[in-house]
Amino acid sequence: MKLLMLYTDRFAYTPASKTLEDEPDCTEPGEITATVVGLIHAEAVDEENVSRVEKKLVKNLKWGARKNETQRIVLHTFSHLAETKASPEFTKALLARAAKRLRGSGYEVWQTPFGYFLDLDLQAPGRSTARIFTSF
Picture 1 (cartoon, rainbow, N blue to C red):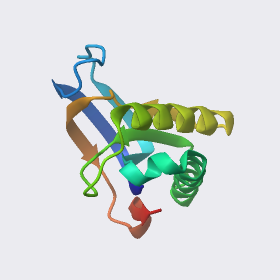
Picture 2: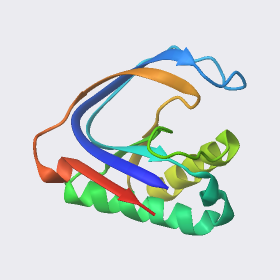
Picture 3: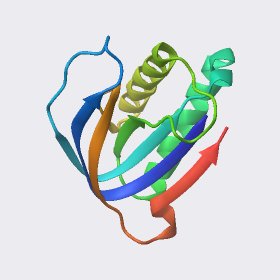
Picture 4: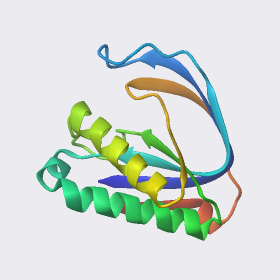
């Protein structure tokens, strides 16, 4: 698992092109303010230890949110951080479970449309806690 967390004052997206035909059509843009955006790359090896990966993902996102004094988290699949990729089915299910756990802990959680390339527009402050990378 590779996770790049960006704290953004503003994170906006618009679906640009669909990459997974089985996913529902989506044209609705989204905008979230004062949020940690988790750019999440699930790797093939992650499928071998689902509970460990899910637990670490949630733990790291909570930590990143606390460091940036927010209760708002965006989950965005971003399969450009490593050489191997988990299956789309695994990744989608992992994100859904992580969102449920985060909501159960009192966080506001959004997920960007799965299976899409998005036009992104974001504003991030220039401080160290606004950009955090981890690999587990």
